[in-house]
Length: 203
Image 1 (cartoon, rainbow, N blue to C red):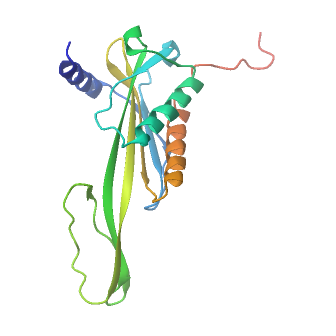
Image 2 (image 1 turned 60 degrees about the vertical axis):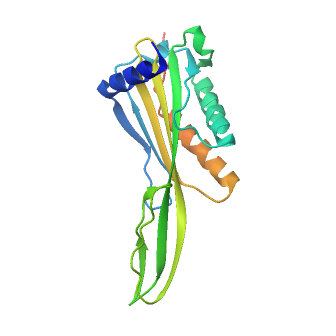
Image 3 (image 1 turned 90 degrees about the vertical axis):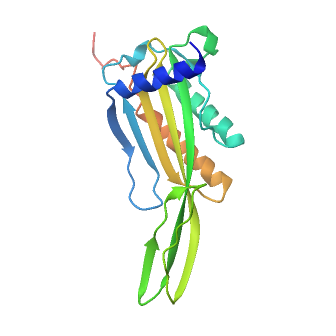
């Protein structure tokens, strides 16, 4: 099966999967980070031992692509999974997609002070401006980053787990690195447990 046919099959099958949704972190306000996780409740995640990466359709820029993979590798390792070559018949296939949107925010005073948030478009899309009229206004552009991580059962090509994170990005790389670490950590906090502790006193 060629790559295009494989991608089409994945999309069709993934769309039929009924996933259990869980909001790990739902913040309020424009500056909150949000993480949302979905997974198939009927799947036995304990049978997944190995995984391999699929190529991203929407990779992050530059070193950020490496950071996403490295941090996700660390989380999957903590869950008892081992990364292998795609040719070694992995139990899971992992793929991520990233996105970036811009939002223009204006604030100032015009016939009484007010705050307006009026743009939400793709980064390469057109910018539409609210008619300000007279007065003093200041506008700035904010960037919202999004990350989607999918886990696919390689035996049937069906998606069994998805993590989605969104956050307002900073102008400082270190701050964004912390946000990325936090988002992926919270994603996999909701990964179904595969090991159970024996209760004290149990036979």
